Amino acid sequence: MDIIQKTLLEEVAGLHEVPEGAYNIRANGELDSRQTTANINIVTKEDKPGIDIIIAPGTKNESVHIPVIISQTGLKDLVYNDFIVGEDADVTIIAGCGIHNGGDQDSAHDGIHSFYLGKNAKVRYVEKHYGSGDGNGHNMMNPTTIIELAEGASMEMETVQIKGIDSTTRVTKARLRENSNLVIKEKIMTHGSQSAATDFTVDMDGAGSSANVMSRSVAKENSHQKFVSVINGNNRCAGHTECDAIIMDNASVTALPELTANHVDANLIHEAAIGKIAGEQLIKLMTLGLTEKEAEEQIVNGFLK
Image 1 (cartoon, rainbow, N blue to C red):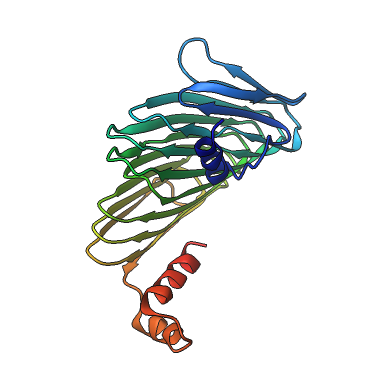
Image 2: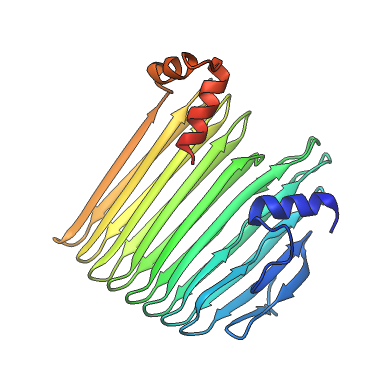
């Protein structure tokens, strides 16, 4: 790997060196390196681009890294990654994509990730997007995440997109069985003329299932964001969706939370708040010696922390 690719890898996966445990690193549309363990196998798909990550039942305290990095301008990368997590497993999955575009053509990565969690399995999934480059080409990412949670399974999904992605559309669809739990935490910042759209749909089919979808975002300059969250309570369940956004300059933000209760014991709540930084917050920090710009940056960083 060259220095640009190593920087991308550090940004999206926090890797300074080869990680311990299982990993699959994809660079410019091809396999760069891979390692498996006794409990985590990674297999290249034969019918389409992508991999199967197979985690054995009962696997504990293990992680798998599957970052994608693109430094070739004009590359359009598409992968289908399936995660089969066995019963009673408890693992962390670190994904993410970094694009460096120094040319005039658009570069893009579309990752379709499907998660199948067995009974009582637990997964913490972290996905970070990052873009850089001084060319005129755009950096684009359009991730799709499909989640199937079996009885008693739980998944926490953290997505972060703070810098350098010109256009993104994220689609997430989840189906929850009995006593399963899903938590989604999203953090987004856009600037310039960037656009970011997220579309979450959660079907709580099982009795005792629960879901919490939370989004925090900052829209600067002339950028646009759209947040759609659909929670369907189809059994005795508890669902919550929340969108908090800071709007600055000439940006625009749209929030569309939607709740549907198809069962008398479905307990569903939605919250949405969009607004500018409060003047008293700026004044308080400026009295401590910060400039207005420095005060804004500190507030934004704290909001997205």
